Image 1: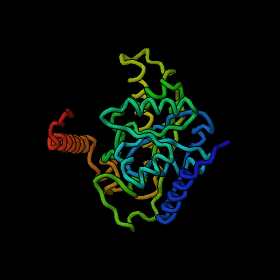
Image 2 (image 1 turned 180 degrees about the vertical axis):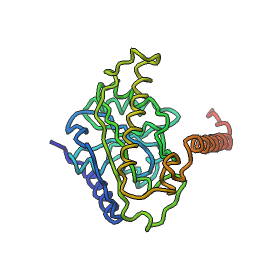
Image 3 (image 1 turned 90 degrees about the vertical axis):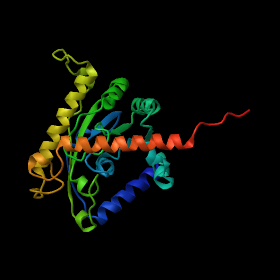
Length: 273
């Protein structure tokens, strides 16, 4: 039996109202792969900023399970959004020091929570699955829980990186969400690989996510030829993975320089007598 969490229920209600206004049309496949109880890592593709809310919404409708997402610390600093995030028991991640968030995530998984992660590490502007970070696999191994791969396609048309859509552009958007079969990273046979279990399982997760994305792209009910939201290899105008990686590397370089400049502007701290 689920305990009541008024803030989580309120946030779900707000999300449903927003998607209702936009007339979002979700189609889900194989959500039965998301367990009705027990801990699991949901490893989700990340092409749009609202992917977390879409997966949260359809999972709640499916089996009323709550997902605890790992999110960047900056989101928790906002007075309203931060209060909601904390009330929904999401986990703050300090990108410069993630050990505490990792520990909190493992504890949550061991206590039977669903943990939502984006193993690509951020929104991917190429709309293909880029190289994954190993955190999702390491947490699943540490907590001895399965990973459920989840592909979301169409959510990026609502809000994504490097593109501004009008309100009209966001109306009546079809969104496909497909869950893959759960797998335990520790059960993967790495005998034919030179990498360790974590690296091999992460590679398996990457291949699985891309395969799911290939399916939902084929099944998508809207014409995509020449569209900004379609990947380049399918005839869209989105940047190639290499182009997107170069832009992202430059963005990260500028952010690092800005942080360094901010630290330098503060100067050395004076010690108290």
